[in-house]
Amino acid sequence: MSGPPPPYEEPVPAALIVNLQIWHYRSEERSPENNERLASLFRNNAQEWEVIPSEDDRVTGTSSHDQFVPIEVRFRHQTWAYNDPGENPMADVRKLFFKTLRNSSTSTLSRS
Image 1 (tube, one colour):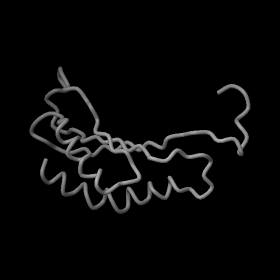
Image 2 (cartoon, helix red, strand yellow):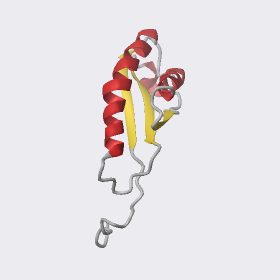
Image 3 (cartoon, rainbow, N blue to C red):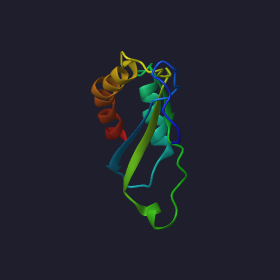
Image 4 (tube, one colour):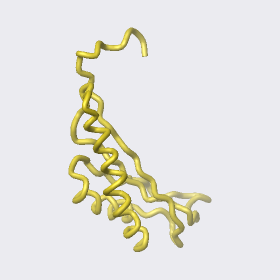
């Protein structure tokens, strides 16, 4: 980054993005369907976030036989942070991890 940083009073847009990977054993390869299923589960419980499933292509080569694979979802915060002194986006991260993810991920993994 060249030059001085912008002054605090000048708004600097920054989208807060959280990437979630839940690794688990599966008899088959990675599953875009599992990514979508996990994303759809969170869409109803995380209104502050845009929930985007990972659009990974099917893995080829030696990795195509992996059985330790991730379920991947991306959360993009709906509000742009403009030097928010109240830390509202960070409060939403806490809520996401301590309430939403903890309650939802276990039931999803038991079905995959």
